[in-house]
Amino acid sequence: MRQPRLLRAVAILWCIACSGSFPALSAKPPPAPVAMPASLPDAPIRFDAREKTVQVPSGQTEAHFSFAVTNVSPTNITVTALHPSCGCTAAKLPSTPWVLAPGHGGVVTATMNLAGKYGTVIKSLTVISDAGSFPLTLRAAMAEDAYQNLQRNAERSRNLQVAAADRQAVFRGDCARCHVEPTKGKSGRDLYSAACGICHDSPHRASMVPALRGRPVAFPTVYWNQWILHGKEGSLMPAFALSKGGPLSPEQCDSLTAYLTGEFLKEATPGKAPSPSITPATIK
Image 1 (cartoon, rainbow, N blue to C red):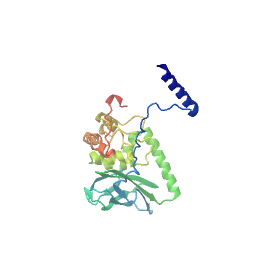
Image 2 (cartoon, rainbow, N blue to C red):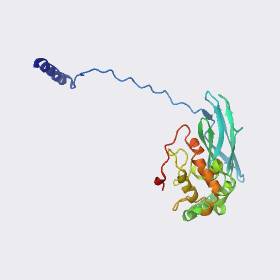
Image 3 (tube, rainbow, N blue to C red):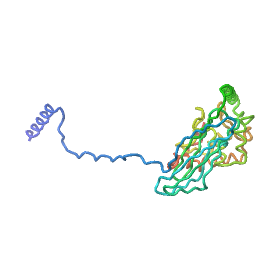
Image 4 (cartoon, helix red, strand yellow):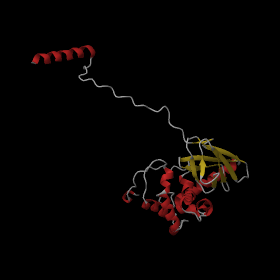
């Protein structure tokens, strides 16, 4: 009974000596190859450009932009809104809502108010549709002499130092023109664009300013209330509540929180459901 086993052992050792590997004791078919797509699908909406720069002559206080839009998908697409990153930029659709049939298109326009600004001003404009959100970048390059540019850069540096020492300073003096006046009478999405998007949606924001759109976590009401009402000591984030020296009424703060915990999540991460909310205990 032992002889067949001995012969098999000898055969295995002979195979090792000849080929340096063990013979397959049981043959299994190789796994079927996974089919890979030849290329990723194109965006359903095509723009003539995603970034545009306008050269602004000296003395001109507005910059005008236009983006040609085409539906390249086989189904209708509805564009529901345009979200500028700053209250100084006004954007317009051909109609609201704007329904684009397959192969059809039109023009989206935007006007940037440049009063009190200098150098190259960069803003963003987000096109919101049922096929997703599409960010556009607007650049206005204003003509000015080098001496004025140096003076204004120095003034901006001083303003940043003031904001670091007193985060509520953003609501006073010249800063109020961009951070207080655009928030008056607004709520929800419009208030977010005027009060939050001006800083947090800017593609060229400072490194200490976090992006709010596209976050994988759905933050709860208590999280947003903490930041909106009280801001954060030791940072540039101011307190927006009237009781803390900010520009927003309790009703405006509530509408902003409701937007950030509801409709904003769908617009910020189109087609993807964010992770469950973090717990209040994890908020710092």
